[in-house]
Amino acid sequence: MRTVPAPPPSLADPAVARDPYPLYRTLRDTHPLLQDERFGAWLLSRYADVRAALSDPRLVAPPPGRTFAHLEEATHAEHRALVSPALQGRALAALKAGVERTAYVLARRLTRRQEADLVTEFCDWLPAAAVVAALGLPYEDTARVTDWCRTGLTHLGGAPTGLDAFLRPHVARRRAHPRGDLLSVLCTARADGRPLSDEAVTGLVANLLGAGGEATDRALAALLANLLDHPAQLALVRARPALADAAWAESLRRDPAVHIVLRRALAPVAVSGGTIPAGATVACLVGSAGRDPDRFADPDRYDLFRAAPGQLAFGVGRHRCLGVQLARLTAGSGLHALLEALPRMTWAPGFRPDPEGLLTRSPRSLLVRLH
Image 1 (cartoon, rainbow, N blue to C red):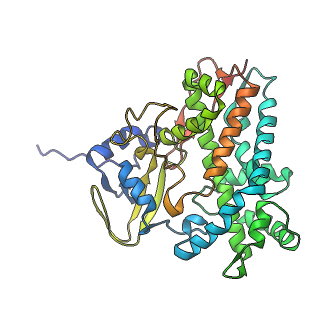
Image 2 (tube, rainbow, N blue to C red):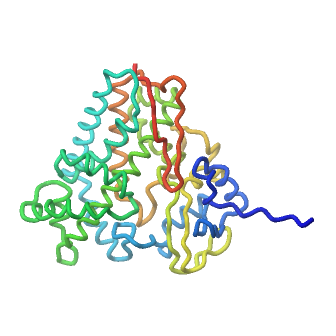
């Protein structure tokens, strides 16, 4: 009787969205480069290959899109040079004050409760409010911006149609009467002696909103889940707030919000498992790279004292997400506000976080007892 060969592993298998880590181990061990025909991409799973791919100029973000991830060569450098300074100085100070104030308000609202879901009542709101503050948009529009961030924006994607219509009047007002906020910086910036077009400004804003939206709120949820799962490390962060950055970096390594980053090959690219052909779509498995035992000792363990966590969650090289500083500030301020307002926060009785998702992944609920 002839034996039918087992089908090759695939990201399209339904079980992968529930738990991708068994597949990741198989790919790293036996299929470091795999053409996944069912998923429609060539898969890279080892840390060294994923890191190299994310910074390789021959691998570009696939269309459509008009955010930083889709800008190439000189155009990308020009736009990055314009926006990077905007996240410093007075704009950064205003952003920090807005994030801290918003985190404090959201955390204090929970102090009279016995239990709460930190995802729906904290994580989903804080990142978008931070970006609204940075851009100088009206606070009362936070809910609308948050909905866009949840449904149509990521740090690597495009923007919903309604965002353009919402932003254009604000852009016009900033061009006429600039202030000290981030939107004013973009509206008054010049590239090759010419101001950025309205489309370019709204595209850049979409990228920043995405960076402060789904990617950040999911990463914040994963951070809280990791610390609540490890009460001793949570106690250390509470006692030594300076450890918050290390806790954040380790959580991004172990449980990134974005597990799969897609690229398109402009030319053949050699990797450890073979050669990616020109024209291929490439899936960089960031979630697998962060658990690669060839790069990290005991990679499934959460350890905020891990040296050099090699974080890839917000990209590397010229496509490193410009919102990484914003995300770190948001996570740190949010964690500090919660620990200050709710010092006895623990998991609700019987609750365990249940991460889900394929391209993006995080706990959809964090039920905690607050007192």
